[in-house]
Amino acid sequence: MLILRHHLWELAVEHVETDISISLRGLTIGVGCSRSTRILYTKMTSFVPVLLAVLLSVVVSGWKNDFDQPVDFQCPSELSFISRFESTHNNRKEDRRFNFDCRRVPAVSGSVTCSWSGYVNKYDAMVLYTCPNQGYLNGMHSIHSNNYEDRRFKFRCCSPPSGLDFKNCHWTGYVNGWDSYVNYHVPYGFVIRGVFSIHDNGKEDRRFRFEICRSV
Image 1 (cartoon, one colour):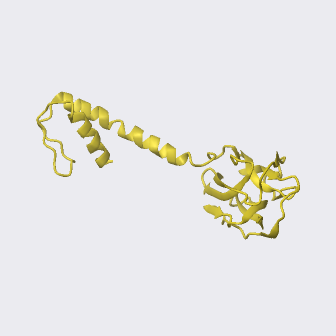
Image 2 (cartoon, rainbow, N blue to C red):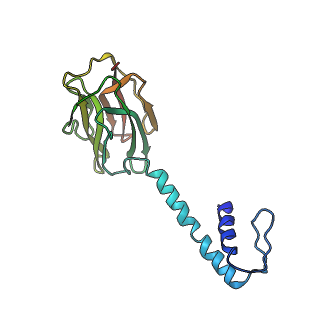
Image 3 (tube, rainbow, N blue to C red):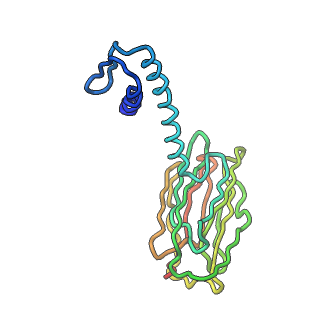
């Protein structure tokens, strides 16, 4: 912040003739500053917190939802699947933020059919969902309840007309612990076909597993 203020100060003094002294580190302003310069400096440095807030909001906006708010995500292309599942938990909100990346399905070209499921779980209940028609996971929708401190989920799946020729399908272990951060990357050559999740009423959190299949 001190460096940023120094740069703002340099911009200010370009347009104001004044007798000032600045230390070598740019931290001390001499007493020779005119009143107008001090006012201008004060006004410009007052924008520093605002600028930092803007920068922070850009970082936070990487999440696809805020705590207690819905998630509504689908990959930009129907030929892509969710290849990265990122989530962080907040103990005060008792909820999770989510973030996703997508990657092209190597074995798919041409037309595909995509559709959303209905809600696949009730609050506090298990999630066990597999994409129909040999399909792959392309999107996720979720709503949060402050009463239950849990989420319900819908999933979007896509598949070519004849489905994918999956091989080596298996379930991962749990990709996260209770209240913990997760950043799971699907191995190359695999896609997500299914989602499994359990809820704990004491932790008020969920753990996740994924069914992944080789698609090449």
